[in-house]
Image (tube, rainbow, N blue to C red; front, side, top):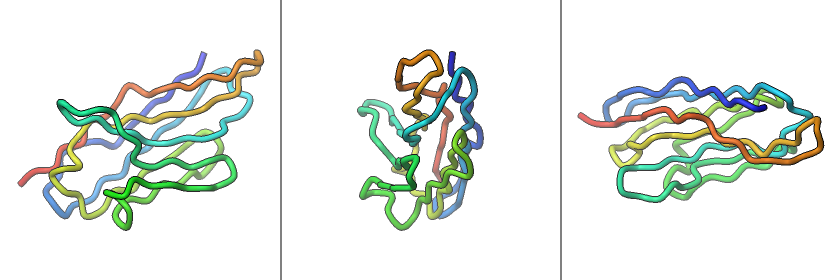
Length: 119
């Protein structure tokens, strides 16, 4: 019913930058919030940044001042990642809280994109 397609992961040296993009498609009436999570090997998935339909933003403490989340339209969300550190290495997942035309409200996840930071 709903797909989240991510792009933009890759490998970069410490101090470098990457930009992740996520686009939602499907039977969508509206999206309440979108965000990015990450999961490093052996660790739990954690929130990196989120943005509501009203523009309210929150960041994990570990990325404040380095990452910027933006939502150019209702169905797309980007994550600009600057000054990347090795500890940012993880699989990054897009997330969306979606109101469907059929009346249900569900949370959807993208397939994940790998971000690797090493020298």
